Amino acid sequence: MNEALRTLPWGSGGLGTQDHQRDMYLPAFRDHPGFTVVETAAGDLTAAIAETGAQVVCVCAPPGERADRIVEALRAGCHVLADKPMALDLDGAGRVAAAARETGLVCMPAHHHRFGAAVQAARAALAAGRIGLPWNVQADFLVDGGDPCPQGELVNFGLYPVDVVLALTGQAVERVHALPGRDPARSTLLLLDHEHGLTSTITVGRLHGTAGAPGMALHRYRISGSGGVMDVDAARPGAAVRTASGTRSVWHGPSTVTRMLTALHTAIVTGRPPEAGPGDALAALRVTGAAARSLTLGTPVPLDPSEA
Image (tube, rainbow, N blue to C red; front, side, top):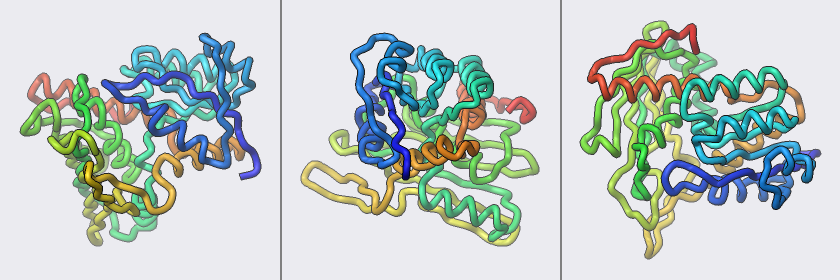
C-alpha cells in the first residue's frame, strides 16, 4: 500500500438501529494502511469534500437519501463506498449506476460477504471447473440474535447471500419465488431460477438468539455441479469466542470488511474495474424486490435477465 487515500465518513443512518459507519467501516478504514480518515464539521457533503480534500467518501446516509448522497459524492469527484442497500429502489440504484459511468469513478456497494476468503476461493475453483458446470446452490444466511429490522430481515440481510450466489455463479436470475419462514418477519426462503438451468435456494433471516451478543449462526453454500459438490463455510476462517455475556465470532486473518477495503483501494489506485459495482447492487436489489412482491402475491415473479 503506497498511497493512503483521504477518506471522509458521511452519515450514520441504517435500517433499524444499525450504525455500520461506527461499528464496521470507520474501525476498518482507520486500521487499513491504504486509507486516512478525515473529519469535518461541515453540514453539506459537497462543502465537506472541498474542505477536507477527500478522495473517498464512505456513505452511510439514511436509506431514503443514500442514493442522492452517493451521486453527490461522485459528482464532486470522489470515489464511494456505499453502505447497503445502496438505494431503496431500482430508480435510485439506476441513478447511482449512471453517475458512476459518467464520472468513471469507483462506486463500490458494501456487499462485503462476497470478499470473504472462503467465497473467493470457491469462486476461483468454480471458474476453474473444479466441479464441472454448477446446476444448484443451497445457501443459508442466518444471524443469531440482535435487534430485529423493522423493515424485515429480507430487506436487511437478503442482499448479502443473493450477491454471493450471483458472484459465485455469474448467472442472472430469471424467476423468484419467495416463501415465508416459520416467523415471516424474521426469515424467508428464496427459490431462484437462473439462466442456463441453474437453480438456487437461499434461507435468510434472524434467529431468536442472544440479544446481547449477536453473531453469524450459519453462512454457508453447497454448490452441486456436473462433476462434484463443493461445500463452502463462509464464516471461516473465524473462531467462536465464548464469554460470560455470550458468543461472538472473531476472524483469524483479515475480515470480510478489511478485504473489501483492500479491493476498493486496489481499484482506485490501479484504475481497474472494481470487483463489485453499482451493477451488482442493482442485480441483487432486483431479486430481493421481486422476492417481496412474491411474498405479497403468493406466486413466483419473473425477471428479465436482459434488464440486469
